[in-house]
Length: 498
Image (cartoon, rainbow, N blue to C red):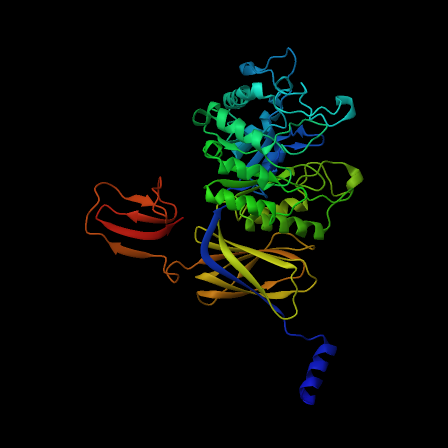
């Protein structure tokens, strides 16, 4: 090496001057899954229903700080003896009603899941799973001569919720059918689930209650529990959503494999339970970045939705008031993890994921990940850096953009809004990537520069008012988003309508 150049580089090193390393993310126009949304289970402690509607107001709706839109509840198998509740149900479903009704007011999707069918339907005659000494280690399974009772029981739950103005949008077959527990639970083999669905799911009143059916939710999103339901035509026709949990396996393993099969059959994929815990302390910033990575990887794995476990816990979104975990665990206070979730729930919900690829350049390592989305006239790039170094982030985009907003969260402050300013529309943008940060870059598409506005003359006129189609040619109920308008005078206009 030239001695003079070596001397200059040595001086730069001594002075702490170095060229900022660059990470490049290339986004393509290939569209993957539509993102339905994000949510949590409306329970806390020992699976008690949350009875404070202020928690829902804090977490749900576009005007909330977090913007969740999916709420999960248990379909309890337990009865209340001779006590009769409205609409003649003996089951203790009433505890969830206040928060579910508030969530519905805020536009949330409600999804119910049984941890067990009624005990009288099972081989061990109890709602418990049977994996304990006091239960004699009796495996709790749904008796085959009671298979025909299962979906009518779900109908009674749907009827009760409907009568209470708390309609359910998705109902699952079973929480963790592959996990033998000493609390409420029920075991199924993959073959038993197929038989249950193909022979009895026609009894579920899907049309009457406008409800979708979700598979059994495997403990670790095991494809052995989801693929058979889809590969058998007799059960596949009834399944709308594949669900599962992430205990023991990261998103890009089993869930990604299950999603491949689900895409083949046109089914949605929901991650329906997991928690990123941190023991007897409040999460540090590294814990929060690990949580953000799980959200991001779930999207990359093909999930349409991500539903966290408890919405109230010291390692979750809202504090419980238990002082043993630290002064920050104030009851009813929005915790930092809620703001981390908001990066995804307030910005990615309703979007469509685009293909993306990251290239790591000089001086960087692999502790970086990203994903990209399109939503209306916005291109959204999520980027997570867990290293101690700041980088330049070069974004190669499929459309020209004209600036936007950088939503930044670090250990020092969350959800800072910084402007992304551009002198002219371009498809390549370089933005800052601070150390140990979670970043949402919301870039506004320049529709005209991107060639997304065009008119094509169609000779045959169309009688009546304009009609609208999405970009795949499906009829819309009105003008919104990127759409194609067929005018009454015969012209077809492709444009964006907010």
